[in-house]
Length: 187
Image 1 (cartoon, rainbow, N blue to C red):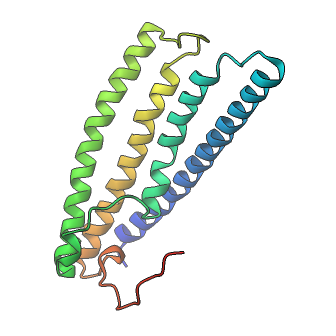
Image 2 (image 1 turned 45 degrees about the vertical axis):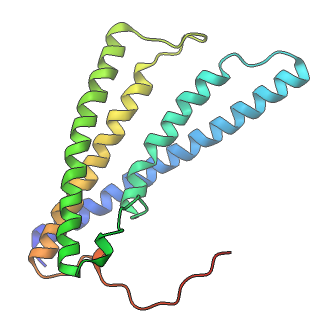
Image 3 (image 1 turned 180 degrees about the vertical axis):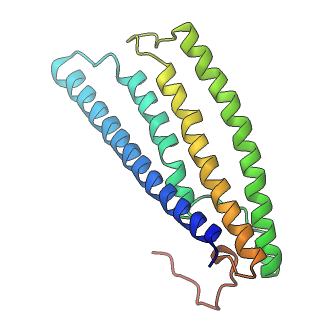
């Protein structure tokens, strides 16, 4: 195995660890949402005074939840794939189509990072805050391009690894033909 293979493998493992840490942050945000909503409901119906920041903070925590789980989903191959036509291609074509798809995804992410970063930077310059509770908006807005940038790095590393595998004649695990297996029953 060449040094480049080893380097790509280590990079993929590192990204998987970063993705797992980001997933823990996403889980913490979900717990925050549940605690905030439960506390607000109890306070509203028991004490008669709602927590004023509930809606705004829940929305911001939802953004954190959505952004922080992207890398883990990708590193575990649990992301959405459009395989309707792709699954009917022979395995060598599948590999190149997956690499092409990763390149398109990477180009799209570069555009999204650029645009969302500009939006977060503008929010920082304005000192944007939420309406009711005066929470700073730019840190939450900066989470979007930051998480997309990490996802972009993960996709770039996987793409390099896939190009190396295909050029070395190694079958990519995600494009290997599936053995004939009985259909899974739905519970």
